[in-house]
Image 1 (cartoon, helix red, strand yellow):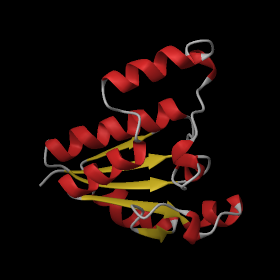
Image 2: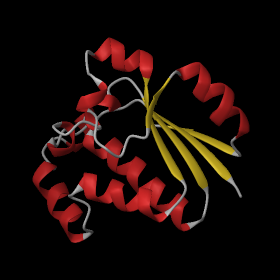
Image 3: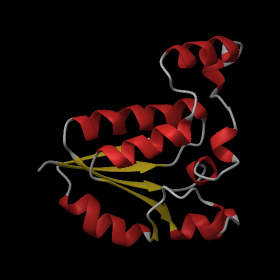
Length: 137
C-alpha cells in the first residue's frame, strides 16, 4: 500500500479545505495517510476553529462568493467532512505536541477526529521517513 505524510502548518480556511480535498483523494486512492497539524493549523482542529471562516489575503472581497461555491460542493461542514474521510480510509491525524504547548491549547480542546498528540521528531522518524510522498501545507 502506498503511503503519504502530510504536515499542515497554515490555519486559513482555504488551506484547510485544500488539505481536506487532498485527504479525500488519498482515501479514495487507498493511500495510507498520516497528517501532523502544527503551528496555526492547530487552531483549525478545535471545536471553535471548525466554525471559523478565515481566508488568506488573496481571497479578500471574495469570501461570500467562496462560501456559496463551497456550499455547491458540500464543503461547508468541515468537521463532518473530516469524519467521513477518517471513516473511509487509513488516515491518522495527529496534533504536534510542541505546537500544542506553544499555542496554549489543551488536548481536550481538539476535535475527536484527532487520533493522538505526537512529537515532530517521532512524526519525522516514523511517518515521513517511511512515506512514499510527503506534502506540506
